[in-house]
Image 1 (spheres, rainbow, N blue to C red):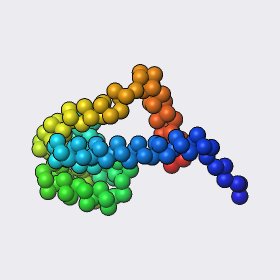
Image 2 (tube, rainbow, N blue to C red):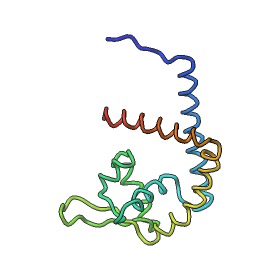
Image 3 (spheres, rainbow, N blue to C red):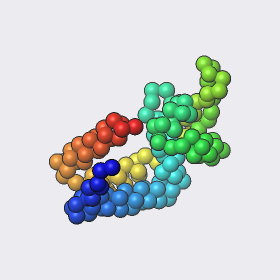
Length: 153
């Protein structure tokens, strides 16, 4: 077994700042969405996945993978969204066991109403604080880390 290579003081400071930033940013975005639209951040994430497609529907397993959620968590969340009329379910003709999650007109309306204030908040809290070079660096860092995550999954 190899010996653990501990984080340097600078790496530890950066890592903890990232974790704190992620926690606080997620909480603030959730509160903003709830206050402005009644949607949770999780609702918004589901609706974004559906609206980012040419046809606003996805297989349940594909949606779980895209969101990195356990299927049971997604199932419970979709049931709540379905009761609120934001999404529906359709049986898959090709696979009797499979189902599609489908964006409803109410779901489309909800995300279209929520998105402008959400984008304003993201811009205010993140991008208005960064230079163009810092935004490029942030994108580069995210791409590198995501690439490594995909390589090791």
